[in-house]
Image 1 (cartoon, helix red, strand yellow):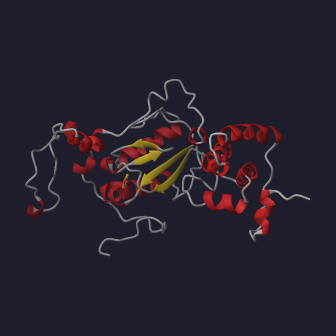
Image 2 (spheres, rainbow, N blue to C red):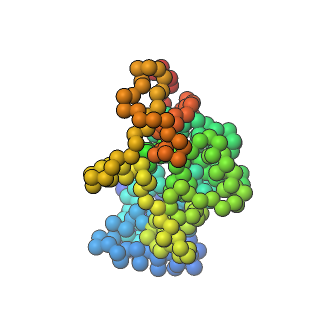
Image 3 (tube, rainbow, N blue to C red):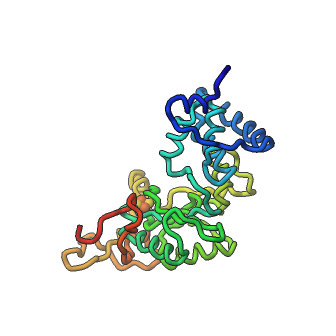
Length: 288
Ligand code: FES
């Protein structure tokens, strides 16, 4: 008698998880998609990350059924799949909303207003970290640095950038998402739902007309170093005093108009204490 890979996972001491099977039609569709993904890699196990996105696109999060499916398709144990699915934060482990609103509360965004934005959205939406609004539209999350620090504080919706946010603009953003009003990221294609995003991340084409052409890129503030390396003129450096004469910079050039702002770094905002209920987030209180 042969054993399935998921059963081999149990034999390694992992608890057996009752993972209900996909309906036959869903399973057949996912298997066809999975075979297409697996064929792109010389070693099938390299397809695990896109397959996890694929099953996430089916149910909105990575279920035990999805992990068992990945294990079966790749000849892995469920323990191996679970280890990967629980390591990466892009894989959700519980049902989530159509729009994952991630507020960057890593160091730079936090001090530039990310903490204040997160606190405001918690209160405005009535949900905590990782929780979803009653209408199933928005899941609020702390997120780590998304390499857009030059546009801090940054909010991501389904991994699209919303740069230079404020508490007020973030409230407006989530209100639009919940009301179904069109929302355009600062950079990149127009938004789609979390499930649709997961399918694109699994490696399937974005079928929306014009969406690929809308794809974003690094903004001007991120490209200043490249311009300098090419011998192009550096833009005026903008440095605002932040608290006293000792912080007046000799590099300061002039008071810029809003149109001259390379990013919000020259527009510091008040910050608030980090979310004490989220131990993985920034924990330091003022004075610590
Ligand atoms: S700290 Fe927020 S994008 Fe880098």
